Image 1 (cartoon, protein in one colour):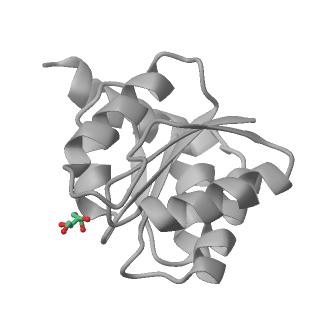
Image 2 (spheres, rainbow, N blue to C red):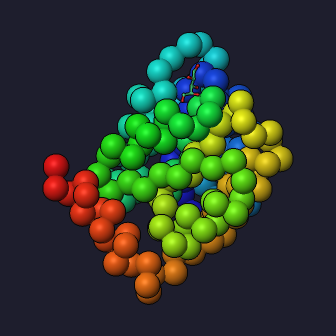
Image 3 (tube, rainbow, N blue to C red):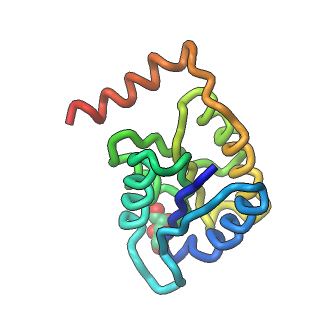
Length: 147
Ligand code: RB5
């Protein structure tokens, strides 16, 4: 898979470790910033990664800020994006299976490196189940398409 990655300054360090981990699982990552711990604004990176994922050039995205909240809210403003913020692997897995999430987000101030790896692994390995969930996911996407 090809994954787009983004973070703010707070998530930058964890992003490096998670990017290397994703690559060790055999996937490709492209980092859209931030590229240092210099103070910056998470909406820029949430928007950029969301637009890249929505364009269809990536199989998904990974976003990290302090809590994962601000950057995932920003990503969810982009049409076609279903971003989940989670702090444990169960939600990550179910969000892909039931909600067809295309971005996973978490907080570097909330989860440690090992838990972040577990979250990402579960999310990457899960598949959307469709079926009874499809109508509901379509309903979510219709909300954005009415804008
Ligand atoms: C930055 O201080 C912090 O607000 C940001 O990383 C994130 O937690 C926002 O949701």
